[in-house]
Image 1 (cartoon, rainbow, N blue to C red):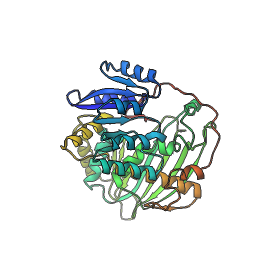
Image 2 (image 1 turned 90 degrees about the vertical axis):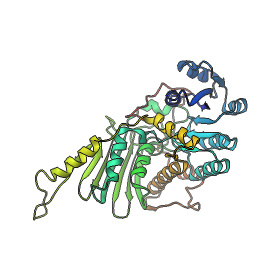
Image 3 (image 1 turned 180 degrees about the vertical axis):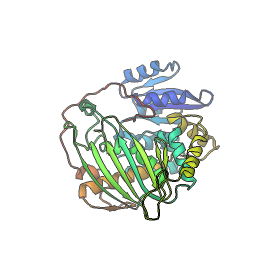
Image 4 (image 1 turned 30 degrees about the vertical axis):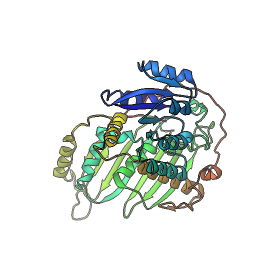
Length: 386
């Protein structure tokens, strides 16, 4: 039985707690910490964790418990120091997205994991959705042919008060805007599906939130060997219609699921109806997907537990988290400098180090509100954790 601690008692902590509760024979949540002891107590009681102890901070919890695994669900600026602290004390770590605010911090976290021999997993819960798993499985068959274009819409909507929470809306505490804190899920999925691009061009703005320094909209173009990918990161899209569309040489597939396959007449124009047989084959593959045993955070935690036991390879790794931060960093650099940025980014890149982005990023507006607490968030198949 692994002993688990939760660092942070905000809204996303509930997603981790409920996920761990799906494995009562494998783990026990023994402690919750938060800088506000009352919040930790409320979170414990809300989930019926009668035997869990509460602490007024991560240091006290580390000193008071013998933990095997910890979930770090605190504001982004604290992810790196907390993960490093727990790893160095021999505790396996699951850390919420984004992994860190800089590549320098990511590398320090990876070094701590390597030095301790413990697992560092960065939350990528949307990989553990049946629709996303279906898309990846069908793509892996190669039936759609070589990739031409991928369109990723990470479209969210947030009202003005969203940025009133004390740590949101500044480059220093949040690390960035929607590109880092909302689209990070879709960025992970894009990298999971296609791998790292060769180069990035981008623009960003703050279109609707005059109480935040950071961007609320960015559009990036990613170059692969022959393919292009288009990524929209937004918290200004009404309806929050999110999608991933993959165009191949022979067909297109997408999430939400849809397959289409055009064929050409002798003049090169599309034939009405296209390749119905190929569409039927793709639809059959999608329908044959075996449902995942656990979804979202529980799916990832199931894999982490198996990796700790030595029964499976870790799927959402620290290296994956770093690659996502690298792409976000390149998008910010491209947008700020108004040029194409090549990947990978080296340690000599001025945006690599902690504070590199913060010192160069524009302040679209200045933060006007600062609440210590905010209402609960909803986490599920169509919502984010930010």
